[in-house]
Image (cartoon, rainbow, N blue to C red):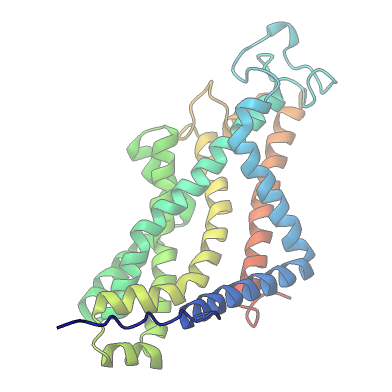
Length: 309
């Protein structure tokens, strides 16, 4: 028996439904990005903060390349030299170039800011989701632990943990990260409590979605906006925490440069060489201000109704 092959059906020349859906998703994403950028441009202070934050990140990444001198090399002939063309920010009591030390010190600040916040999120977000979504015993345990940690002010808790762990940049990062966990837990828990009662979550459960699916496909993605804003608030808090710990001798150890170490070294020379304290302090203020302004802008973009005006 002869089999007759059916002719192949021609492929439609126009876009397929999958192409249309992909284009629609890409179009909506581009539209949201464009709307967010327009809101950011209207907030001039947030735009300034975004530019300053980007500058600090670039300085932290390339500090070893752009530093004009070795930040740890002393030159006793130039001790306490005021700002000049050769040394734009002057030198310290050992003749080390202040500009080079500030640039490398920014690296330590940015490292602690980013890594400590990431560490806090890795621990706090699962705990907050567990407490907010399941409630009852899980909520009771997590909430009591969080309340106990919140009984101590942030810097007091960070100093205590750093003293126990020992003085180093890594231990300071861990101490600051642990100290930021309670605030992130409470925000995540509040978002989980709010979101789990919404209709689309109930629909996902009714359609057979398990806890993992509901948490990671519906609850967590919709809590991302609040968590991103909290991250922009956590970075400047960590920068100040690192400066305080290094100032107290619990963070970066000399001769490695750090903004807090530089402020500590400047104490005996405030009257004779004020530039030793002014420039590191000014950099700390600018860095924290930049990320706080950026946080306001991110809040406006992600939540236009609740953002600052």
